[in-house]
Image (tube, rainbow, N blue to C red):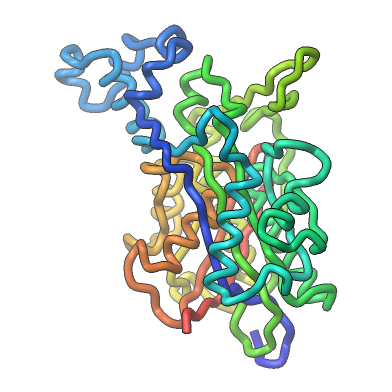
Length: 359
């Protein structure tokens, strides 16, 4: 982007993961998983299945989980309710503001992507603002499923580009463990909890969001279904989050995320050779590896985090981004160019390209 043209740059990132780890063996201890998991069918489907007859049911579940999804463990909040979607978002925001060297009261807007707000009103953004010491900063929450952070980033970029704000906090957070249908092993194995955030600031120095974010959708009810409400009353029914699977969904995810990423890249005049890191939504290790293969990118340029964290909906992207910016995935050039890309239930999808300097 030419110097002198107003855009948004990332000046800080932060993330929060609950300390509780739930690995596949612990997940299998749930009665609903054991009741609905077909051990013998899974045993027969295991790759290199010789010797699988000697595995316990829990070992079959762990191996099946890792082969099908790439997930070994995930983070979940305590059941006591002390850690909430809002508190996770607030902690990620504090860490992003600290990196940015910015006071929360300097913000012009807070945008949050989430599926699991503790309450409808006040909205998550207002609650986060209060928790970080900026109760007078306006904000709102949006739902674009797993593509939510990309949509929220595009919103922050648009506010800055239009002159409506100069410092925007963009956050994504979810406590998916509250809404997962644990009677469905194929869904239960996927999801975890966490939050990530970035601080966007107006700039005219050429560094920041490059080109235009690309957002799109393709209606489908097959990928992910979420109905009801998760804050349960005597009169309400529990929410159940179910995720579709199979080869078609996997191909759709790979094709969609590579497609929207390529469309966003086209607006910048850059090629894939110019990109240092691609951070896709972490839905399944086979999907992120499929993106790596489809784009013919060398190892290390596409980031994979799902083994330890699972699918945290829209938060997978900012959490991975924060880890990269803090050097947890190896050296980062200065400046570095990133592509963020995601697809979510519905389908929603989007991608954004930016240049970042840690100096």
